[in-house]
Length: 317
Image (cartoon, rainbow, N blue to C red; front, side):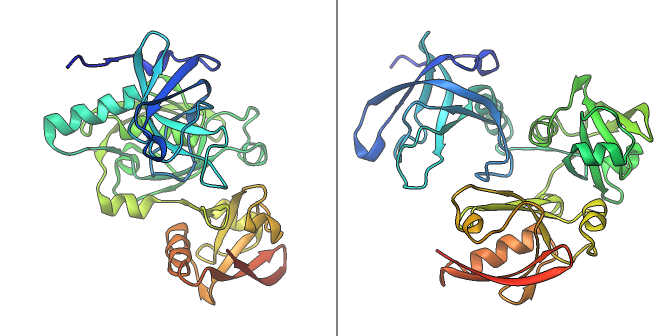
């Protein structure tokens, strides 16, 4: 059987025509056509590490695993998921870039497992307000909100409050892409980090560690609750000070999906969720577990804090 030729997903451009092939709803050999809507989509909540191609080619249940092909008949992605409120096509589909799939496949073939690079830091987006607080004129890079003891980052001299502006000589623009780049770096390799510390640019040399399950669980700082339609983040020292709470006293809402049950309940970004079903939540991982525990009841009681006021809200789905 002839094999499909693999393309170079890094050369894809927004607006380029693509074709999705698969078996939606059991209808084999279905072909749909669309364009690349966006590249490098992260923080969708499908997986811990995300770098998706977004397309408006119709992708429905059953398309997963099928190829996303360019007009040169080259496979540029693997159809993976859809964003939908009805469960069907709504014009927003996602595919894993073939370059990423090839990297993972090579690791599985060579080693029998996927190994990810590890720094040992918790990072967050650098907003305009945070940039001003740290004395940075331009909003570029990402903020280090926590450094784990004895981690590769700690041994390299990285500190809480540092702003990472480049990795391996390439600019750092957002949290998702930086996490992906570090995870795909070979453990044991020595790389350069360019940072801003108290307004001064510095270059640090770090030896990349190997990410284990325990380390992944410890560094998870944000979680998405699809049923509720919101994303929360573990409170960092800066966020705790900003919202007038102590670290470990809840999680902060960073994103609310329009039209979701969270949005209809009046929950907004910046709201601090202190309890789930009358149990305190200390970090994003605890919040996710508490929401999953309430899935059978299809109802959840939240204690919210906005400013100095606290309020109970029940969300049902």
